[in-house]
Length: 289
Image (tube, rainbow, N blue to C red; front, side, top):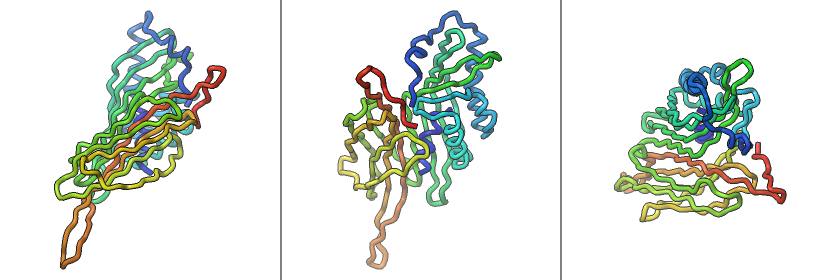
């Protein structure tokens, strides 16, 4: 469930698992009871998250947990509290696609989703939708209980649309993954309603906590309804998000005066995983904390 928390937190404003660990995660002679126990951990996360039961949710993680964005359990705990204070009606779900177990270690490939109603005002009710494909890494402890020790988000998209923007089919395309310090193009495409002036911006953020505000530069959507921007991936060995912001306006005339009214707005956030730069000895730096 952690994947969806990070992009949701960004919307309110790493250390990779070792290669040796990943290479040993094969399903060799694991018992059905172990597989059931591993699945139970992730299903219980969903249950506790939907009830906003912080203590129970955190209890499913190992005390030495650190995810692929470099967040340890203390940082992640703070992030969760911020999200649950902001989105009190959010609902999570998970679809487990593959479980691989080798001894006391396990990996789980899963698809995660979340939805929420966003009631900013009567004029601008909205909705949130989020999807992520995630790999969880778990270890069986001495007491026989499985705990989440790390996780990696393979891809992630979060969309929040308000007012007239709720009916838009917003498409944001980014390469993923990408090498550090490399140019890449983000492409935003949507068709605004008739008699509407659409504005939009594209910006990039490093995945970090606390998250810094995104610098937005709005432009009128071109006639072909496609906005592009070139970014350079960071060289700090940190993952990134591309944030697309859109606004819909309509012009009205009253007493020979023109008035521009906002009729809808929204955001789409997509993850861009950045492949660490190799150093001279073949090693890489840790992800930024």
